Image 1: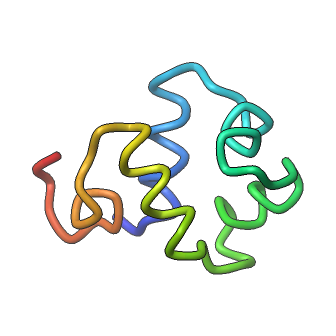
Image 2: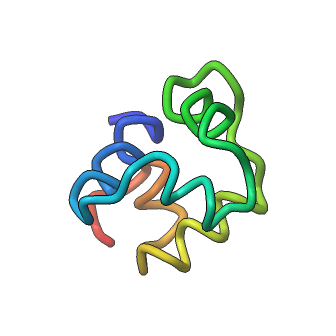
Amino acid sequence: MDYTQRMRDLRADRDLTQSDVAEILGTSQTMYARYERGANELPIRHLLTLCRYYGVSSDYFLGLTDNK
C-alpha cells in the first residue's frame, strides 16, 4: 500500500473531510487533495503533523510496516 492510500484511509476512518485535514495542516483543501492523489509530494512537516494527529508512526503512514 502506498502512502497516498494510507493517507485517505486514515482520514476516512475518522470521518474527516479533506477540508478538515487541510485545516489541521494549515493548507487549502485543493492542495491537500493533490497530496492524496499523489499529484504533489507531501512535505515532511505535514507528514509529521499527520503522524502525530493520527497517532501512527511514519513507517506505518508511508506503508513500510503494517504496525501502527
